[in-house]
Image 1 (tube, rainbow, N blue to C red):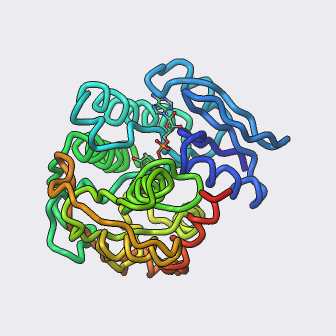
Image 2: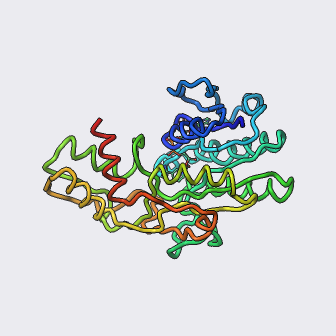
Image 3: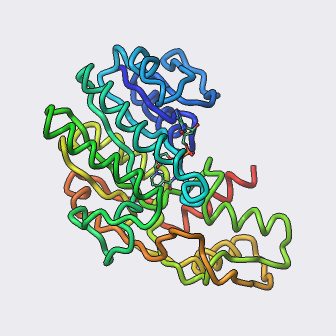
Length: 295
Ligand SMILES: NC(=O)c1ccc[n+]([C@@H]2O[C@H](COP(=O)([O-])OP(=O)(O)OC[C@H]3O[C@@H](n4cnc5c(N)ncnc54)[C@H](O)[C@@H]3O)[C@@H](O)[C@H]2O)c1
């Protein structure tokens, strides 16, 4: 099977491409930035999802598309909402249109951020009420998936990922904390109050989720992909300090970034009904992330 992965050079894209190759797929990667993966079954095309002609040509021959390319941070969406809108809303529209013309299935990588300040645990029927530009532009992608599915019977499935972490992630709370402690082990500044409570899901579990969606995901459907457990930033800090055996002075900025959803927990029962289970505990996942950072 030949499949395309947009955003193949990103954190999740790199893991996904490796796994798809292991599963016997032929993969065409599409990204602004060059991928370092070399494999006879991997073909890289450097391109922009906003370049419709190149995207169309590049997708030719692919029976499915894992669409991951995006502007991926809330703070950057606040500082440049237009760029965020173009990449995430228009870019996703382009991917859906090109795929529809070719009859290719699209697995769209959305985010829990689309729910905004939701009651927890949150299920997929919750209204999309984002509080950030990133949440809004990603929610536009969800809505276009539904519209392409209902209007053209396009094969689209949405995965709403919670906080993905693990080896290869050069952003996010764990990376931030480890890096700060590497620079200064006597003091740790935590962003926010430390009481933010989120759902962290380990990268290998997320890659399993993509494969299960490819096989069993219902067209026109959205699925939450989280661990189904929420932990506070303070709990993550304690875990990291235990691993590093450090006892620094801890200070808090008191405020998180604009648009941050400070409480998130996925209801994962819909995705579990496809046979998926998150396997990696937060303690294990943080340890594996540490092993990667150490290397
Ligand atoms: N990492 C998470 O915790 C998380 C959570 C929820 C959803 N997601 C979604 O998962 C997807 C992947 O996230 P990630 O963490 O791997 O992000 P990432 O920032 O590591 O990777 C994104 C990739 O997209 C590429 N890209 C950006 N604009 C592009 C464009 N115009 N054309 C082509 N390529 C472009 C970038 O070069 C990069 O390689 C994104 O759609 C993101 O919104 C991620």
